[in-house]
Image 1 (cartoon, rainbow, N blue to C red):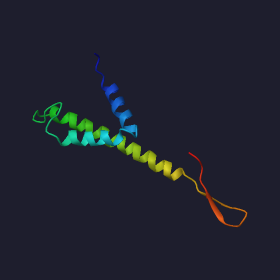
Image 2: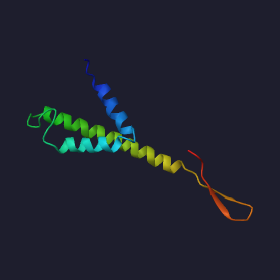
Image 3: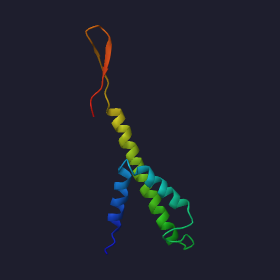
Image 4: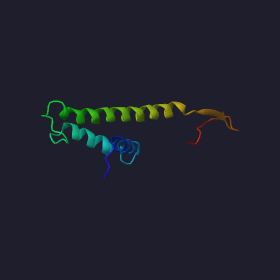
Length: 96
């Protein structure tokens, strides 16, 4: 079996981008960071912190990209006011 860190990153990223699994992955990442059980134990001087740093950086980067995309999609929504036959204002929003 061939282990590739790039494929692991792509898998993690795809899970975060899927709305069905997003909050489960965020919660599991936070639990992993605060739990004493790690892939590489923290008592090892340098290697113990590498896996935690990797998870933190991936989590922050991906969640910030998701938040940025949501903010941009909200700012791109346009509300157009039109007047109908009776003179009342009707809000029309584009279908997305």
